[in-house]
Length: 284
Image 1 (tube, helix red, strand yellow):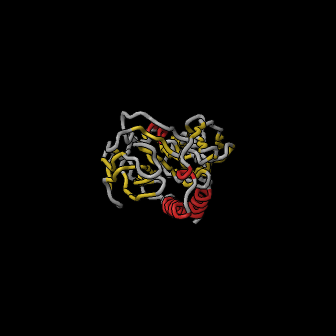
Image 2 (tube, helix red, strand yellow):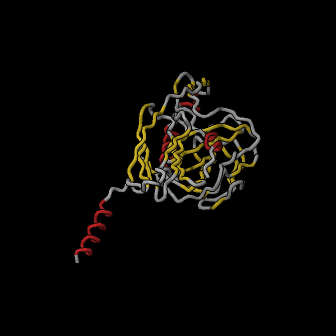
Image 3 (cartoon, rainbow, N blue to C red):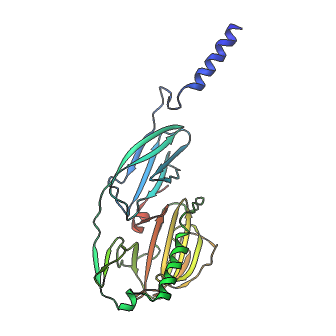
């Protein structure tokens, strides 16, 4: 009976040990945050190595989605263009152990663009203003959805080989009035040029909107969305599954546009980020 009681006590002691008590001969988890400079409008990748179980985390109130990647776990999150620079905390749980890391978001200076446009393109009529507000609400309803991963491997350029026009983050001053910064990249192209899906995804919006004209939005899962504006035509339908490289639309100049081009936008967990940063990433 004495030995039995000793065994029971030993089991209880093991169960009560803190979850962070990794085996003495085990390599503790390592956490890498990249790139070295985290900026508004950029992406942050968190890599956890030497984890043997589950990896979870959050940053600025958003859940991180960790995926296996060459012997490690990797998650990507967006730093919105309007994020205030400063210190923030990354919260992690690795094999049941809570961990934290400090993250410093540093200021990035984006260029300023001054434009002069006809007054009727800047000051909206009550009817157009009401329509633009409806469009904005419709678009905003998309971002809270956090669906399962559909994307696979690296994201690709939707218009490969084309020159860039207005870059991401440009602070626009139109008719001497400051406007919202440019939340995507403009790609110079000809009317009717085919637009490719940057990765596998599902079509969650096909709509004619006041500012963006004919628009398509793809949900790639885990909070990654890509947007395509000013299209002459969408070649996909709402709810359709697409594969990386599929033609989803044709370049146009619809909506508030002064010439044929593609406005390409990316949101990662609701954050407006530079699309060019997304296609640089090796996510697997």
